[in-house]
Image (cartoon, rainbow, N blue to C red; front, side):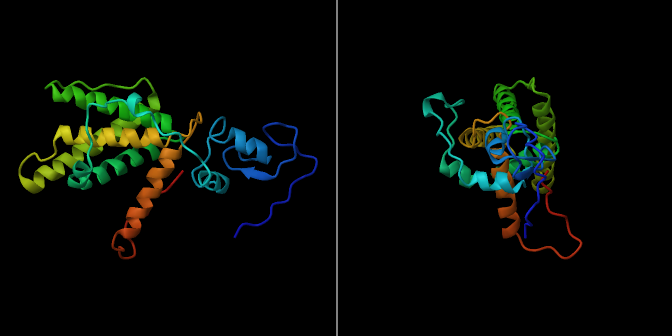
Length: 226
């Protein structure tokens, strides 16, 4: 249960230095006023995903649906049938992207979108028979991309060991990556350091964990959110 916090009446908001602080900002480790929390949240402040004020704000965020005509990679069709057929791959890439993002402190939705763009360009190239990896200029995205690539190769090797043949097709990976890109564009809250898409991935992760059979005591720890 949250306890009421007492504020020094002589202290001003850390951001505007004018109004009296009314809440503690874990992103700044300082007390700020409510208006500054609303305007600077995920713009100038990198908010922890578990911040109570961010979580509450998520409930009221509105998203502009991307213009279908402006969507990238429109030539790649991702049908409901495709997603159902590759449900396991969809779940795996969701988790791989989330895992990569959480390893990079301060990563944002912009970094995830840059990661997906680079991965899609890479797998498009592979369709032509060439092995050429597109690297994003964004260093955060580059680190996330490396993590996702490692997870994909591990997944590919595991499937090959189980079946005795290569069963993970690049064209299927490409389709799921495009699907993820479209979700990322949908969840763009247009804030400079916005992490609505990342919050969505975290929420989806814990929903999947809740549906899984419980492990005995001493099993793997749940994914930590920074």
